Image (cartoon, rainbow, N blue to C red; front, side, top):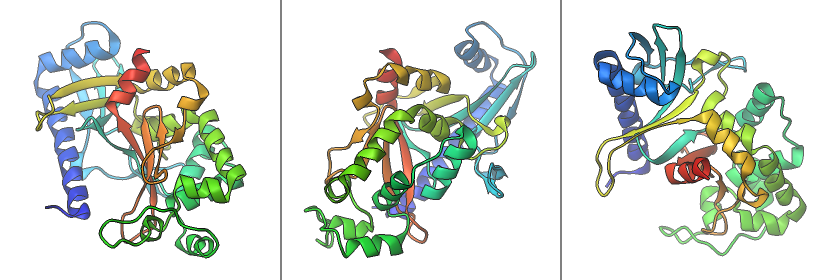
Length: 291
């Protein structure tokens, strides 16, 4: 049985293999190129293309911060007629779409959307994710843990993960926690754009225009080839009732925030601070854009 780190490495490897596979199919197969072009532009076009995509050899790209960052477009196709599109490639119907630290999320909101995250919202995010272990430890002396336990050691789940769940934060900080939920609801379109399209990428050529879910046959799951406009995902959010734009997940006292495209949870890389893991769910996205 794989450890978590082994599973993480295997998932990354499979993801890069899918990117390389699609790049090769687009370059070699005219029918496949025509299928992609018609899916995006609604017309025939088996034109010659230039495909940028590096798979496992992908280099970091310029960031809105004084550092390099990962590109959001795993593939960028430029057709002979000058039309171009960037694709975020996913090889499963659910999985990670964005993995920032809390500080990078806050800075991304500001530099990409001129969106300021209030201090009390930042505090709730840091405690919910466990972004600052020292800060979490200080609050853990004052706050009663939830009733949920980590199965392997039977220690409190929140102590094991070094973060607080929604139930605990809502009890300890009712006003601040409500502010977090309301802020996410008010700004969910920008959060979706940051997660799927922009990240911290400075240049539009490194940003994604489409979510491309391409899966091979897996156990109990058919193959999928689904291209979805990220702008359509974002625009579809407008019609949702406010309470469906962000709410607390049902498990273990609220370890996730449910979002229109999936959910937000804590991710622990092990050797570095916990991160915000935004995850996509194809079933959520299809329900969103088809309503």
